[in-house]
Image (cartoon, rainbow, N blue to C red):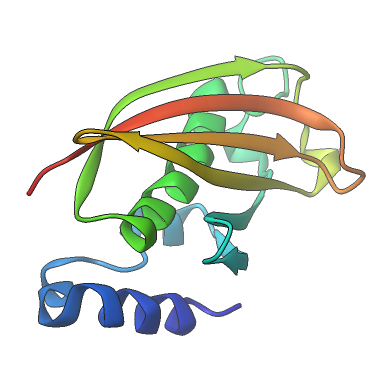
Length: 145
């Protein structure tokens, strides 16, 4: 899936207002993120991010903040596809395993799980190429319209 596909979907959703946004965001590009798969009917998006040495902590594992950034960089585009403009209000992450550069990359699957008033609810799972769960997250976003 290319970034242009996602931009086209966002264009259809946001109309000319898309010109106000940087899609994909600069941090997504900096982290060398890729859009892998999107399912509009089920409300999920999968992205892939390389595990680079420059993302590692002193122990040689991917820093938690970089894992959080990968999660947030998946939740953000998904949230724009499933709901009006919104921002992250809360992001709670549980780390299951260390992530080393030997893994090559991680995949993040974000899922829209519902809404409560102006609050959108999401979950995310971070996995390696073999499907091992590395981290999971819950997030709430606030609709800003």
